[in-house]
Image 1 (cartoon, rainbow, N blue to C red):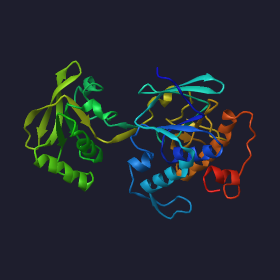
Image 2: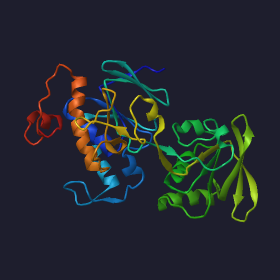
Image 3: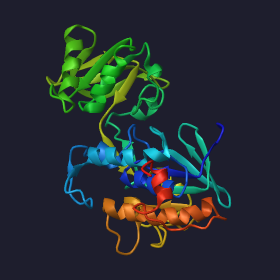
Image 4: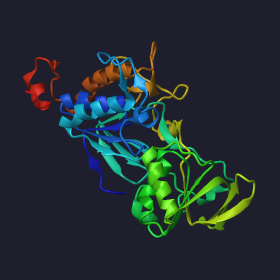
Length: 342
């Protein structure tokens, strides 16, 4: 177990609600770390609809998902939150009053007084391709994310997919891989045009391979991949030699380990009170789409409201001897100083 990271609050989920929670807690001097399973900040807004317009943010007639994410990141900058990306929370254990020990799938450990679950509909999980026996190779030869590029140095890497993730990692890993192979079911790609152009240039100069087809099976022993069986558009099956495969088939939403954290669940959602959006476990809060209560509306602005009330109650756990005085950012010189505008 690694040395614990000690801070006031841990926010699970770096989407809009998690980011705004950083802001509201920061106004109350609560220091926060944020964990997200994705490789970028922004949650669904950044991952699923970065260019899709949003019309119901108060005072902003239209903004894209990426634009909202960038605005929220700028808003929390004065509070210097620490982000831990590509990490999934596995366990949440109560070890004090108030104190929680939280661990991630990479072995990182946090000790915090407050936990805020802002994980949307759950955690984004990579979609497993429908390849028989793929489970036997997961974690040794088949990976759904790149945590450390160095792990792929001098490997023969087969990347499967046609979107931005597949193209980005093809371009990033090609210089260090022994051989890079990109496999897609058709010779058209959903990724950024300049990435497609870069990939095709590498193919034309013989620096990597592009194969059109689909993986139908894997070959190897003891979790070590030696090749992938690929069915071409002509129906013929051939074996592509590789020792590593990275499938990028998109993401799906799953509740994940939340069910093991001790909080009450109802239809895969977390019931909370409407005074502070606290769960049945004192010190653990849930805001945004993952919570439920009478009259709940799954709107970003609802999550913002929930985050504001949550922060007031959270401050009592973090600073039990400190009297919380409600202030407005428009008139409070102390809040304006924290924001760097005073």
